[in-house]
Length: 357
Image 1 (cartoon, rainbow, N blue to C red):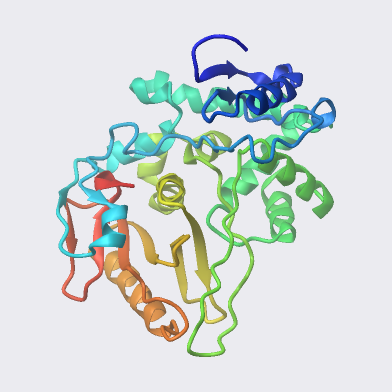
Image 2: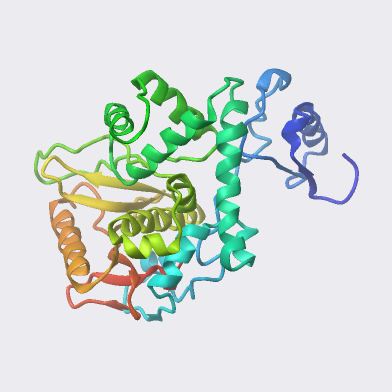
């Protein structure tokens, strides 16, 4: 415990008694920023921890890196600035379709971001192998068959960006795999994947609306990084270019990953909106101070951009602004496009290759 501060202790969960030792030191030193505890995504057993650490510890979730953090985005358009001064924007996008496909498959794993080519793509497959062979069983001590884990993860990958119920995932597995799962098994596997931060579902946004339209409250299913879905499905960059529908779904997962990274910095959360008329908004960034922005995600193309902009304006017009703030901005977040710009109707069109927090 002695030495320069802050004192970094890596993989502390291997010796969980360190938690109480650190808490003891913090109480006696009565100063901030004394220790940094880092660990793997597999949670520790709490049987050797006698104190919660409330008031002594702050938790920070380390997500995969955003495109801005990996230097694949220019960062010319700032989400923070859109919330504060949503005026004219400017930015030039250097990412074409082929590069985007590579970035989706590579993922935001720190080591992979320093590499190129096939060796960079292997990092996601290595992580996927660790999940199915050991991590998912280590999380709670329940042995799970690696082949069944693979089948579940393939089905989850096919249902990313949807509100698919467990029964639908069961049906998907029955239709596409060699065996069936019951809903209890699906729940057990998904819950274990949540615990090791492989998947992170998105909660539904519940704004005040002018009408009595019912809002769907089911969570939207996402992996924490699109490369996990790529590995689960056994795909590569060329496969995505050859199948733009799948590419679009996995591109959406990459954008959600980046928006979550940025929202964390801004003290906000990312939600999804869908009502009973199927009016949908892919992402709502809602800050702690009540400000929020509405975002539609499209791979690119004039038709899809126009479709996204119209959805955003419909949702904006439904919100009861006598009971909550007006949206700080409306944005169509795209993959392919030369520039970031503001349309005449006020909707921003921003390539993900220009965005930062």
